Length: 449
Image: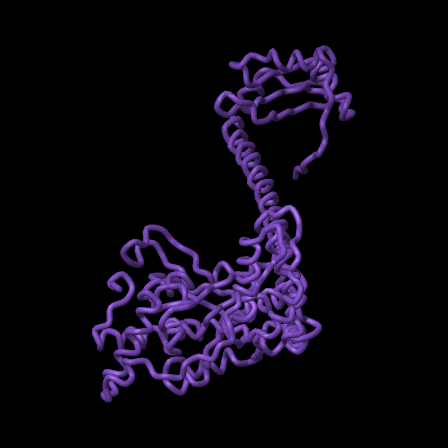
């Protein structure tokens, strides 16, 4: 049995000179009188050894010394030259073992450095995004109380609320308040992944599972093992992926595409949506059993217009945040009366819209003062007249076709994701594409204004 010694032996100049002058073609040395040689004399004195003879086996790999194997005898009989061949036979396996040990030590060192860097970067990300949730003691007090109740558990959480209310921030707070805070926090925007790639992205695939699968790939669920996976826009998930997600919730196991090995997982699922999942269940666009599994602990996050008391603190938070992001030399002030103007606005885009308006104002006036009057839409009454395409025909199918076409034109052919036609119309992207094929409406790459 051996042990690693964190010990450096200081050698005098005569011993170092002897070590440097060992011929490169001699890997086994016999020292019959250790006291007569500076190197062996100093080493046995340092370790208090009563050696009568010593054999040095020098381990070289690609003309580089990776270590030494030293045998010392105590008393009589001493080592003889006949022992050199026996010791030299150990050279190859010991050289390999020493090389592997050094490589393992280097890998372990790099792994520790990587883990330390990862912890540091997580800390920086949390610092930049803000550990403190703005409004936790006011408009989001009820939300944070519920988040605190469920954080220490492994139960799935469903975050509900309009686009831009900060569902990702609450999910982040739940993870970093849980026992999994040292594990990964993997975010997935279900609406941003094409239907054809959703299974591969979530569950991974084996090499050769399909055309283009040149290597094995771990999915997002595997990457979230021992941590939390945040499924944003869960209402955009295709039905076939919903089936596989249900299995993850039930048994915490997956299979990669093209694989037959079951992979056990230890993770927590937090889902979020701005859609009415209960209505989608009734319409057949969302699985009822998956809805029941996800709806264990729903948390409704109120829109910004229902917690206007948080706007002053949010304004100051975003100004400080954007100062760092835009690398400004000082924090600009807002013009007098700005707070009243911001609190009287309805904020259809919620906190995200406020963040964007603050950034836009700081880009226009980096030195300040920040004026939001030209950036907030006016409260003029909107016309209630129907668009011309609604009164040009009485045919229901034609009305539907015209309306879809106008919305697709407004999104410049975008169907999926935030700001897409499916989100504006409040329908599932797959269902919308079916209707567009039916009516011959082009989208995506085929779209032309």
